[in-house]
Image (cartoon, rainbow over all chains, first blue to last red):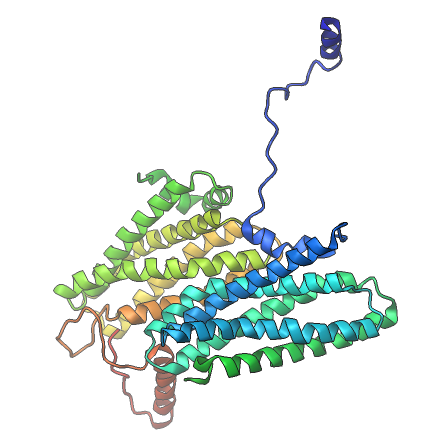
Length: 222
Length: 232
């Protein structure tokens, strides 16, 4: 035993890192886990149901974060208005995720694009998470405007700007997440997909804006 | 409690302090020192601004200036946190907030350096409009100095300009509204009454901006000077 140890020491005399504790791997922050940009291209694991559950949770967190922006807007009137606006903001995202994305899925499948349902769900959940996170970050500033400005036009303007910016961030995230997946398609499918995608984005923007216009009284100056 | 050496490093080597924030090293000390610096510098600057009217306005402005600056930082910091995360830097909350506070401390130090300049200008009896411009320039210079900490803190890589650009817009909007809520700092020429807060309905920031643009347009066409007449 002692000989063996000595032999080992003879072979590796310069190993000085024996007493140094191994460095802990850096812990991913909450936002890193929420946005998880690398997760989009990760191959599906053996338990698909778990992956769907993870994306569903990500989507719910995104809606929750987005609704904080609605609460901040609703502070102008207070009471039930906070709940109405919280629901309204989340509803805009839910409509895009529930109505526009499935339509895109059908069109992309029709074009035989190299994308599966889980891939699309991952891109959608990450886009919603990015947009929701942005809205949550802007919520304190929006609350200041909602509570302190005298004229309704400023709240309408600032609120619309915040929602538009979140929409743009969501679109950016969606396209960035979808692009690597679409690259696996053949030339024809890719060409058609790149035509369908901008049309989808315009449709999603109009749909989201319409839902927010209908469900957020403060955007109408009310 | 209060680290003078840190202030030296914030002024001389913002990149080093930014790296310390990013690595989450001794950020509590950075936060403490930054908050004290912000409070002291903003109080001094506020007092200098209030000295144009004099008397109790000095105390009012000295009280409101730190409230405005710290309030703006508190409301804008979450926006910086999410913008950094979305555009490729999903860091933990503590490093991001300490970075914002370090930037705030650098802003405050430059504001403190500008305080005697502003006070002396007021003391010479300079015109009201000129004082507003000088105070704005002081704020702008301090803002640029503070921004450098954020620039260094974000390092290179994609999304840096977008993060900074959007944050500056958010910060300016929140800062302007905060300053508007807490007005007046200087007072209004011809009005001797000193108020802690103006509660006259003046339409808000956007309405005032639109009115000012309209006024400038009218003045350009009719060449008849006039002022909006609001407290600043």
